Amino acid sequence: MSDIGTDFAGALRQAIRASGLTLDRLRHRLDRHGVQVSVATLSYWQRGRSRPGSRTSVEALEVILGLSPGILTRLLDEQGGQVPTRSTVADLWPDPELFARTLAQLDRSGDHRLERLSLHDICNFDENIRPRTLAVREVLRALGDDIDRVIGVHQVDCPGAPPVLGGLRYCRPGRVRTEAGLIAFELLLDRVLMDGETAVVEYELQFPEEGPLGRRYGRRFPHPVRDYLVVLRFHPDAFPSRCHRYAQDTDAAPRKQMNELWIGTSGSAHFATSDVPRGIIGIEWERN
Image (tube, rainbow, N blue to C red; front, side, top):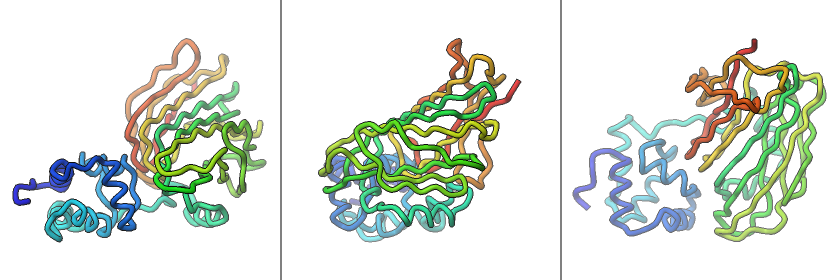
């Protein structure tokens, strides 16, 4: 292929189109090469929204798409000097070592083979704008066979008692680990998934009454998610004066304030977005 374009995203997009492969079939072939990425990630790469974090994945793409060796990696080198070094998943949490140590106690063998199709968060606050409950619904699709669980992780600012996991639907609890504001748990699916099958899980976190006053709600995304919705429900006696959406690349990175969000007559603020990459997004507010 001689006329392949001058940037990585364009070259990859053109090569995929010429191959006749769908992104799902390309994902399957990458999996046979030992490279496990989601359809959403492949979509980000070909649209220039993110770039591969390893040469192994790029070299596998060159083989599968019938390209000359080095053609895609060379384009990445020319654009950025080298394939960029990306932050790790642990960098999304205030204490990366605690995160790694806690997750090591859970069975994550199938977690990277789950595609996150949608995620809904509904958080309720009391009259002091302290979080009281967080209800979560997640829709998943298997990227391989014999997947029986998904991992959940939340950072919570509760110096005393940790939040309580409950309200489970379409799943049952596995191991739960809590330490220093981190709660991580396994949700055992109601059936074992085979490649391409979907599952829904719902759960709720109940927070202790004497938690800190809330200033923001942030969701950490260790995996890309196709569609995300967050709804914050405030107590009728305690509406914030203003709300803004924000984003962070890592927990240590500065928060980038984005658009202002209206608080409706229902006392709620929300936003919906799609093609969420790894990182942190959420809502922060000013109190009256």
